[in-house]
Image 1 (cartoon, helix red, strand yellow):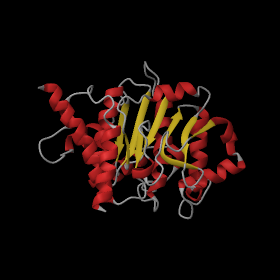
Image 2 (cartoon, helix red, strand yellow; image 1 turned 180 degrees about the vertical axis):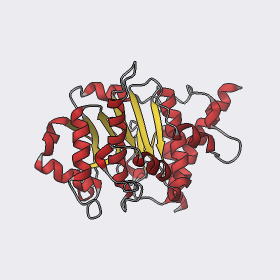
Image 3 (cartoon, one colour; image 1 turned 30 degrees about the horizontal axis):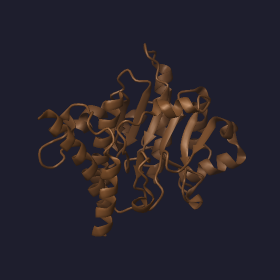
Length: 289
């Protein structure tokens, strides 16, 4: 296992060499261990800035080891690109649900879902519904979901380029590399803020028994039945665009911008994400000399 970790870490660092000379301030780097209370407090409130993109993440206590480091990488990338970023925890979800009308659900129903993968559907709907209900000078155009075991390897990656390539799409997502896991992988999803997206997220959440089927499995059924004309509104990208093909230590290419360590050990995730962030911090220190 140790040799596999070293190989993957080396691969990741090679792919992260692009654009490492330009980064925001060094506030995401700390002496010694990666201490992240600042980040958790800062983005727990939701940094939506004035961006047309809002990145949403969810983290539970049991994945804090690797999730917090991956979140630091995401915070760095989103700050560099000027994207809004908002972090949800089970405690915050309970508070939000109690005062929200999103999907008309009962308090605690989201925070205590047996399959935490379903949280993303509700949180995307909540974030999008809030965008419709708040008038701002600059209207939010896209809500983006990123799993906590996923990082962007190329800090210069701009979602605008991808979205402009598919101007009529309401949803952009990568195919899953293993069909038995579902048609697509929901680890990285981009939704246009639109009435169709809001309706689709509501149908995705409410049309199936979330205990007996995964979010990806439910999406596959909706695709098969072309629910709400999902095929017309969705672009299925190649697996490597917003996802990784397992095992990443063999399938990762220099032009891949995303690393998704789904189905791997927590120790491997933590070691890899720490190496990515450490490399970024080293570059920041060199720049300040």
